[in-house]
Length: 543
Image 1 (cartoon, helix red, strand yellow):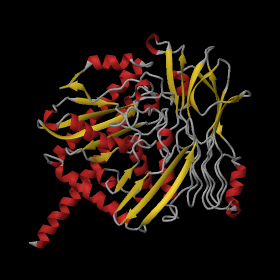
Image 2 (image 1 turned 120 degrees about the vertical axis):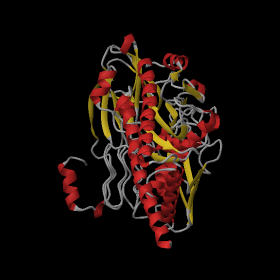
Image 3 (image 1 turned 90 degrees about the horizontal axis):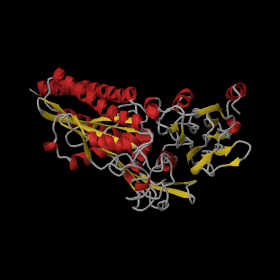
Image 4 (image 1 turned 135 degrees about the horizontal axis):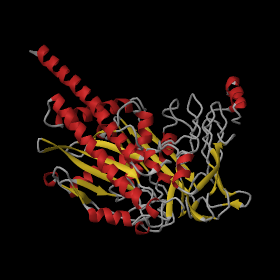
């Protein structure tokens, strides 16, 4: 009897593992649907999205690989907020729910979160959720100038986007009216709804194929296996208390990010007490986004091979003092929360440098150097005379313990750079230069990745606004183990002078905007660098 029971249990585990793998393909198709149907370039070209499936307790079972940690890990909590506002027993097939609340969503108003209940045989079996970045939702635009959330754009509370399959046209009209890009914005809302529909369809097909009526056993299996796997990895790290701090540019003053990381048996906690107070301007970070990127940094070092879900995230506890820049409450301005939030993996890495010396990279550019413009256009859709566009631009990553850093690569966000041809097609921009910036990576036994040198001007005889949201201009990425720092970034009008790293500034017709993105830092002494690597650097003109 014992042998038979063991065989039955083993067979069940195998089936659950097969279904888990199938679920990962379901959410990846969900995410790819969003990318392929989106209107905004930052989604369809750069992949600034998240997509995932959740059980009836609001636990994330699986996420699409396509997407960003800031979206995915904060969306992992947002579904619970949807369930609180719309209890499961009140949901109907065809309902769709929406919000862009920064504290219940993914951190700022430009990210729409849509959640859709999935039904099988007239019973709710799970929920699909997705997020994408919308280029413009009114207000002051995608920059840090605002001093409260209501200046930053249209604020959508927890609402029904569709009721039993019927879209709320009043809500859609409100959304499209409160943006400089009405066609793109409304189209992106429909693409979000469509990707969840695909997820629901594929999930029901999977359940019918495997002849299961609910996801409870599968969800418990995923949760428990993932939790146990992460706990086993944490056990390999010496128990202890680890500290680190980082200085970054800030807006009106320099910002200190301070962390205390505690490893205790099967869990890791990170406390950001000592971090600077919130800013007057829109560089503040809601706690959900702080948790998202801190957890991602921990996952990269501790459990990189374990799929991301509620179970794998559970051992990480993250907190920051309320009122600090990493836990800014309503009505704080948070539009450019990515600037600071995306620095947090580097802060975590610094904590664990001594505990995991063979795993920790040097600091990198970290936060995206998104170049956002707005102004008049000669190529707007449906006679729209205004444009707003974000060119996603990246710096270099820090050197890895046994390899050079990556050049012009978005880490930790993972958002791809926008092709020049796309930016020039949708907005009156002319890119005169976009290339690696030689020597911007810090030297070391392993060099940091290179940043970029970029020159842009208006393609028509019109001024345009630059909504600057840049960092690592005053404080570059720091090297490890005597590796050199990366080169700081800069923003200027060519042959005229420096611009501010943050805040809206006018680029006049004919002026050339010149941007150098930051380089990643190096690891180890440069004197120990392999001669073959030095020769390669010289041949490729990287130094």
